[in-house]
Image (cartoon, rainbow, N blue to C red):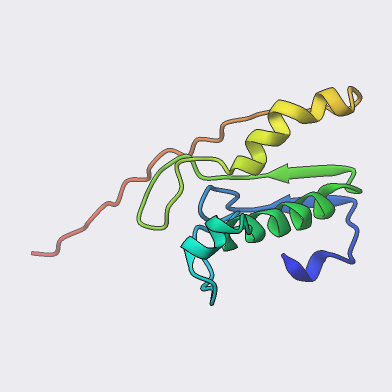
Length: 121
């Protein structure tokens, strides 16, 4: 997403906006130990990463006319199951900042397909 900082889109489709994907659950390593950071009240690497990711995310959607944010509600080995905290923040706060914004939520369901096995005797 870092490469999108200087781009503006009319229509934007964001896929896999699940927690632990956006923002990433992986932490970056730091040379400053946790105890020293806590003692001097320095920000933790995860907080720094979260702030920068949030800034990039909002910058990406700020000028778009239509934004589609898709996330997986089924938990599996790739994660999923929970929408990103960025999506939750948009749903809770965005209308109060701009009442002209329309937010629609839809649940898309795909029915499982059947596999027919033909056996030859």
